[in-house]
Structures are given as structure tokens and as C-alpha cells.
Amino acid sequence: MKDRVAEPMKNLRRGRAAVKASLAVSALTFLASCARDAPQDTWQPAGPNAERIDNLQRPVFYVAGVVGVIVFLAVGWAIWRYRDRGQAIPEQTHGKPVVEIVLTVIPALILLGVAIPTAGTIFKLAKTSDTEMTINVTGQQWWWEYDYPAVGSNAEQYGITAPIVTSGQLVIPENTKVLLRVTSRDVIHSYWIPKLNGKKDSVPGRVHLLRLEGAKPGIYAGQCTEFCGLSHAYMRMEAVVLSRADYDSWIANQLEAYTSPEAGTLAAEGEGVFIQQCSRCHQVNGLLNADGTPIISAPDQYLVSGAAPNLTNLMTRNTFAGASWDLLTPECREDVWKSDSATFGAKYLNGVTTDCLNQKDLREWLRNAPLKKPMYANPENLAATGGKYRGMPALGLTEDQINLIVAYLLERK
Ligand SMILES: [Cu+2]
Image (cartoon, rainbow, N blue to C red; front, side, top):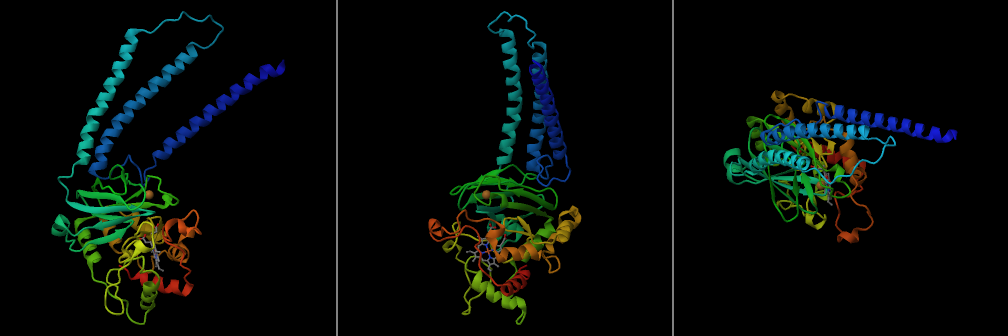
């Protein structure tokens, strides 16, 4: 007899604890979302395209919030008012036309009020006739390649007189309407820099267009948002916005001719190791064979995606391997990322200096890349991919070889 009374009381207490816990979780989530320096915050637009989305999502969010509160209050009131007190079942009716019409018309009007500005925004975001610069963006397992073609306004207005191929960090001039032509070499990925625009899927065999425009210099983070295999979580990217003057310096530096390291240095020895171990997958523009012909990488023979990052100017970017690790030490990174828009450009253009190089992560990568970033579910089974690798394999380099390669890579800028 005693137990029968105690059980419902216990349930009630448990129920209250659950309500308190869920309220606490909601409050924490809400507070966390208010953190001011979240790098991928969709509520902090940093360019006109993201602002258009923001102008739409804020009113919709507030209206939906008010509707949500009204619905919860009404449900709560009905639960309390008509709780079971042993009363008789009330008389059953079959609908009230007035209530039904009102409750259909009000949501229809709200939806119409959302649909009209949404359609307008979609058309504005899809506009391409005012494009000032075009960049090809290609997703593959698990990094993004950027290729700045030397055509049209790219060449005429921005001095891109030869194609520039980079990875990880997209570099664009401030207040410029950039059109990304997004595609993929293997599976479906999705490109998203939340502070600059919405997402766009990258699909093999298709080119999807995405506008980006940054209103002030700085780094804007993003990540692949379509599950794309084992290392999807390590497929990140950044958009770097530079002032026009800084952008011109960036372009000029990317186009500078290759210079071999000074004879007798570690870097010069490293060049030899690089040609032996790395050039079959990684292009470094300007490297020459003994007979003076250019060394052209052939990643299509070794990799499922058929491509590996171009390392010509590796040390001008400051993250690597799908922007998942820093090429800069934590202090140097902080200095660049936290700088204001007036000083950012000069710091970014410094690239990675010997003192600032994050030796730890780069060396771990060279020692055994798949250990750092999982590449294969079943590494033994290369037959399944026709003998080709997914991502960078472990190359079994000695520590001496790694020293030489790091010295060589440090000069790639
Ligand atoms: Cu992906």
C-alpha cells in the first residue's frame, strides 16, 4: 500500500528534475551561442551576401520565436486546465469552422510574408552579371583546391597573368564580387564560410556558382558540410580577405619565378629529397629535371581523387592538410588571427617564418600523415582502389630526410 503512494511521488520528482535539467541545457546552449568570437557564427555576417541572409533570418527567427512561445503557453494552459480530475468526458463536437479558418489564414499569411523576401534574396544571391573575379574551387577527400584562372577580369584587373593554384586558404580582395565555381573530384562535399555566404554543394561533374564578398580584411573560417568519408571532420577551409594593395602583393608573390635554394644549404639537399619523394604527387612550379625540363607531378596515377595540393607557395598560407592544422605556432597564429583589419594584411603577407613554423604538426604529418588524418578504413586493401591512395600515404621518411624537407618547405613562399 505504502509503495503505491510513493511511486507516483518519485516519478513526479524525477519529472521535475528532468525539466530543470533540460532548462539548464537550453540556457547553456543559448549562452554559448552568444559567445562573441565564435569563428563560424552565422549571426555575424562580414559581407553583403551574408548580410542579405541575416536580414532574412532575423525577422523569421523572431516571428517563429513569438509563435513558438504562444503555442507552448497555449499547450501548457490546456494541459493544466483540462487535467484529469475524474470529471465526466465532455460532449464531443466535430470542429468549429471559424477557429479552423482563422488558424489556417494566419499561418498562411505568415508564410507568405516569409516567402516574398526569401524569393527576392535568393535571386540577389544568385546574381552573377556583376562578377569582378572568378575562382575555381574543387573539393576532394579531404581538402579544397583553389585555382585562379588567368582570364578575363582576373588577368586584366588583378594582374593574374598565369594560373595560380593553392589549397586550404582562399585569398580574395576586399569589397570585390568574387564568383566561386564549385565542383568535386570524387564525392559530394559542401563549401561553407558562414560569415560570408550560405553553403553550396560541390558535386562531381557539375559546376555550382557561389558568390563571396568580404567587407573587411581578416580570416573567415568554414568547414565541409556534407559528409564525405573518413576524414570529413578534417576538411576545413578559410577565406582570407585582403585590402586591394595587399592583394596585389599577394598576387605578385604567387607569380614570382621559382628560385632553387642556395647550394650547400640544408634546403638545397631538401630539394633533392622532395623531387625523389614528393614530386610525383605534389607540383612545385619551376622545379626542373636534370635535363632542364620542368617536373610535372602526376597525382592522377597515385591518388583516387587525382590531385594533391600544389606546394609552390606552401608557406604563404598558414594552415595545412584541409586547413586542419596550423603552419604557425600558437603565439604567431594568435597574432595574425586576432589582429584588427588595419594590421591583418601585413601580418598575413609575412607568411610562415622560421621562428613561427609549427614544427610539431608539420613533422608529424611528414612522419605519418594517415596517423594524423585517417585516410583509409582498410589501409591494406589498396586493390579496392586500383592501387591508388586516398589522401597522403605514410612514406617511411627518416628523421634526417624530414629535417631536409622542412628546411626546403620553409623557403616555399
Ligand atoms: Cu568534404
